[in-house]
Image 1 (cartoon, helix red, strand yellow):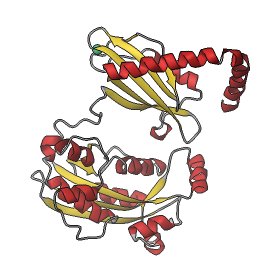
Image 2 (spheres, rainbow, N blue to C red):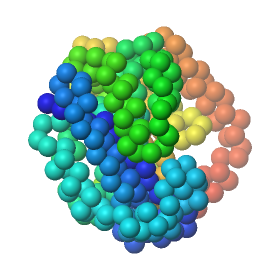
Image 3 (spheres, helix red, strand yellow):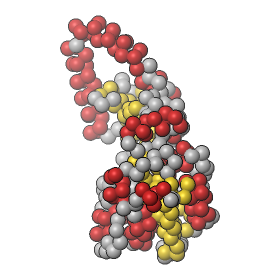
Length: 327
Ligand SMILES: [Zn+2]
């Protein structure tokens, strides 16, 4: 088993261009990978290889000024790069057979997936991925902060001997940090779920190939929202209170599992790139503090409803119009 620290640099698209390309491809593409850097570690966490390739973008061919300043990559280097299908194939071969990726933060693998998807290249070789930033947190102070790679290097007294924001250099520094964490042990207990949540995920995610929800009502009447199951024992949960709709398109549901107790399920709604809805969905045990804010939210909501009774007729007809326009 090898561990591969992976870092990518990608070219940002100018906003209008990004929208046009995403519509044309009908999939998400926020940027195009222009450099892949990776360092291979053996099972004893010794460096045993490195990989670097400059990738020639297909859709966002003009190097964004900000990216150029940050990475030092030039338009000419990018133009002479290897097309993604060939670069990905070479990289996959270099990775070998039995490996797990380590990345600093959660962004690189989704960006690589997005790129492979947009180019119609298989993603099944991406396999096991661990966020080393999260492992660093659990092995140091246990806080869920997004620490920079520089912070972790400082923490372990690793000298910044090479320029940052070069994919290979960053992959190398990530490897040096990985060597100081007991990665083989950490991944035994690794979970992609944050500490306080029993379950965490996205529903209606157009980036992941889902259609998304055309209306909010469609989402709220979906089985996963209306008839959820317990993340622990998979029993059907029973609704214990009315749903709370709070500011910023957040919905909270109060449910109960006969075996595992009270739970609060939260949806935070966002627009997909194609204007449908998705939601970040979390399930957590209903502790006193979160139940208190849920109940206070309901009371606030009640008093708001009473105050606005006189305007209700006007509001509901206005809402209807908005719904039609949004649909
Ligand atoms: Zn249960």
